[in-house]
Length: 127
Image (cartoon, rainbow, N blue to C red; front, side, top):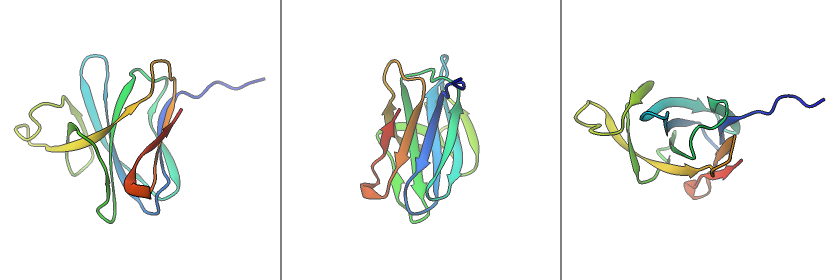
């Protein structure tokens, strides 16, 4: 008898050091950005539980040595734990403006895993 199918958005830290991760997504009414998850080397964490509600998610990560996994989609963040609604006027609202990389999970994906590696700090994805 098969168990229930898992449906989550997960991130695996396949790099050699600890990373801090922030995630941004649309909840159907607007943008939400959350952080920070701290992942030790060679560990995975579920960032969102349940079936994926959107096709595009945005991730930013940084390691202890100052390395980053980033992109050109700007979202609001701050130094300590946060949940920020909206992505406009970050600086005016007292937040930092941080570049996230896009994760395209496809139209029908129910779960997705992003893998951060040391190689050129380029994220890999799998569903």
